[in-house]
Length: 444
Image 1 (cartoon, one colour):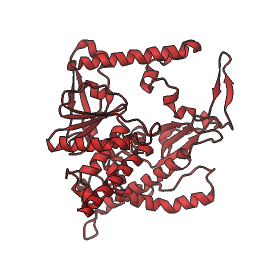
Image 2: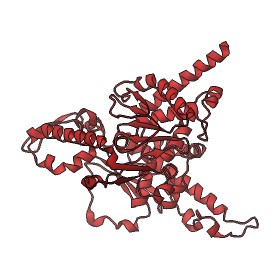
Image 3: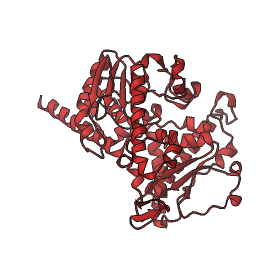
Image 4: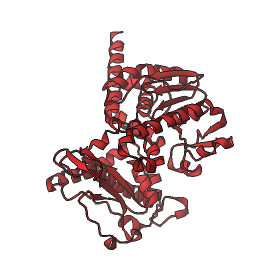
């Protein structure tokens, strides 16, 4: 939600496209989750600006110097800030009332988790508000007001699914297919290795090609891309990645160095076609731990220690190296949980030896984030200082600890999207580990 709200603030709005299962017009994330989060963020920003305004008042009750406080906002803008809960019409009044009663509590939870809304407050000029568009929505373009006149920053929620009661046979006149509402969510079952970036790079070729050759074309594209990256991995000396270790993660730091946390320099003219590729390595505060995807790991000249998460090992790394053969929770509910022990031991040894630690997974958003989260909870205190696990052994773990530490991690790794199943495995592993340590201490 942080990435979504930041993108909307920077661009004046954003589209979110999702699919849903048969029989529904919108997924629950559109009907409740995102509307709730927009309201929570709006209220948190309102409170943040109110507190900033209060700091501009001197002890005598007179306005202070606004230049001293860069977060100052005019009182009239603060009071007109919309903090209402905007839910779609199909949410019942009873459910709406129950949600409304909980919103202020969720704002308190957000503050208690040490969330930093300051960067978002600086760039969000109008409150967030969701709008809903489905296959049945009719929009008259001549009746849509100019975006500049809107009193809110729109989060436009587009449901791509047709609300059909069951799978149906479809045809475009040339070919036919079975349409299953919501099937697009499981892209690993049909994409055949095609990523969004690869699709858009070859979109015209794929869309204009014959339908019966589509699978073969996709296979060729994916294989060429794999070979290309493998070759460039061997030629990594032609590319230097300057890690901005002390300038990564937060919005202000990103502003100083453009839109990425790592600066990529291409030294060979033959590689200029790749010069616009943005490779991002996220350093987590002062922990000496970084997260990135496999593509970034292929081209970076990283020295230290490395954990690679994934089914197969793809990186030839000369330093301390650990391969975690983990898969997504959809395919194995205990894969991550069964491998976290060796990851934490490896991290402890690495950090004790004053080595930087890079954690890599295919997309840099899920498995690597969860492994990093487990390491932070097991070996670091709440302030991000390495304590070799003393706080964990003393206090154990709670869901609140996981939530708070995840907020800390996401403050730096702004692309983090850990799945619920993998987060559950992290919590269960640490819970079992804490109980085991306590039992051992009681025994001794």
